[in-house]
Image (cartoon, rainbow, N blue to C red; front, side):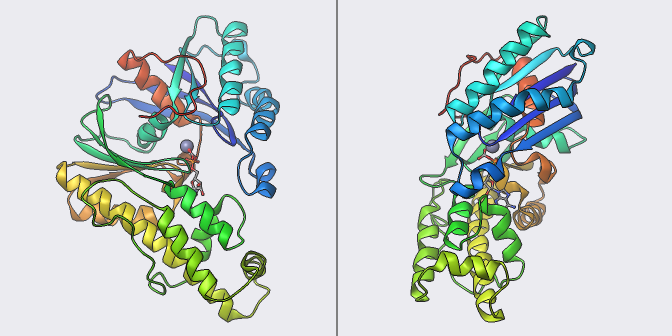
Length: 355
Ligand code: KG4
Ligand code: ZN
């Protein structure tokens, strides 16, 4: 069957068409079309996402993206119309929900309208990158801009939360540290780029909650450690100075310093994410480890977790980086699984929806 999916929970206006076959034991997906219209340049001057601007951009972009994806709606007969209902920015979520309702009324009245949990989208995104069936039990790490969650999954329909962040999400920490360094939003890709030129062992930033028994995370202390380190360097107007460094206008020494901060912060964050995930996998006797969310686009995180997963004899499952940031293909996958499970969700924006 074909699934048409819409995602507008944050700053990406995304629509996808995905073909799905199989049951809950071994579903298969083929992405036929996947369009993401990013609002990054709109929000960048504000250093983060502005909810009402996001709403305005979604309203403008949804019809454009839809027309590009489906130039002749009468030729398309999707079985499911999936739309993200939360978590996320409520004004943004509503634009997608209302647009889905209009499409349903106007073009696809026979289609089943399914509300999707955005986090279930990230959770099931590994199915977009994988050929065989996943082996369970599995441990799944979702690391995005709003969430950092560790789960133990016994099947595609059942899971148990092991832990989550107590303060900032992993992606949020990347964004905040990037801002301290005067780098633009979103900070994750900027930190990763800068870190390639730095020494990850240069500065011993803390690994918060690494040895705590729980599977919870905490990233705000790490961000504060970076802030104090920068202050201790005695540089005022650090942000503006760093911007210059990022643009490579200063001499090589400060450039190395900035790159070392980025690399050492990234190493600390990745250490915590990977070690906790592997510890959870050992405890759950996991046969697979899944990685998803915007931070999962980070090559260093992917490589480290893949290597450590191999060491414990489990399979590493993660979709390609283009399916890690917010996209509608993952919403189609989660919509199909929700349909197979017979799950029903209110078609209303639920900003704080959780797993
Ligand atoms: O999943 P996502 O697109 O949106 C949410 O659901 O939150 O995640 C966005 C987050 C941002 O904080 C962004 O900085 C981070 O993912 N991110 C990265 C990378 N690419 C995006 N973090 C680290 N390294 C990256 N390469
Ligand atoms: Zn997301």
